[in-house]
Image 1 (tube, rainbow over the protein chains, first blue to last red):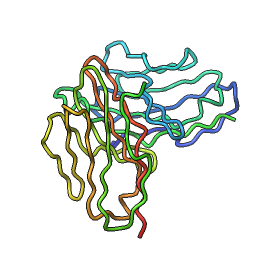
Image 2: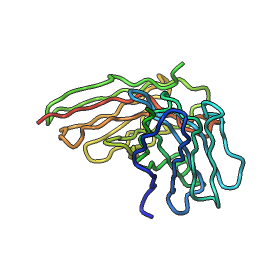
Image 3: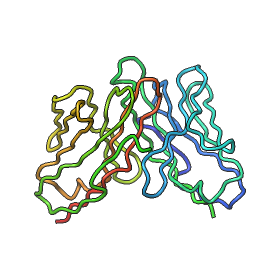
Image 4: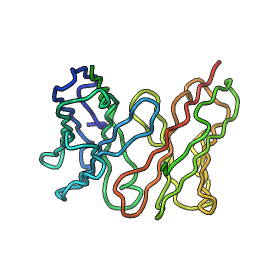
Length: 117
Length: 111
């Protein structure tokens, strides 16, 4: 594909429900990142996947958040028992490996706007 | 404690004006600084800076890094309404997989 794609683009859910957000990275990009952007805030790192290595989960805010990446490509971010403070835009990014420029130039998807009522 | 601080938070200018956006950072093992433009949802990459004093330029946009004073500026000359966006600054740090982002500067260019 031409760029990172995410679905759904918008999601409205009720407090306590589980949600799944999907990210399709750019083909050939082995690194994948999830970030969260709350209103008026900068991007907050959530989780990082690199190839077959164990993911870096250091940014996940609670154990209600989890993510997986199947086959080294598509990733799903799951939020269980959603809370109103989970409302935010969830952005996925991918990058190449190799040189520093390739690794650190992250290409972002359009995000999923999550609203928890 | 914020690792990346951007200023101003918002800025309104007229078309044709020149603007300077600021980004200061404080990380232990700095690796690089990146600028992104966020118009609707997806931030788009503008520049990556790793060395002090070397200006990166793309059209009307330019950026420079000062590793001694720990800041970067993004200049936009002859602004156009299409420059209206949130400009995000991010830094990478050795030992960390992610980028650390500032809260951004919201630029509005009015005709």
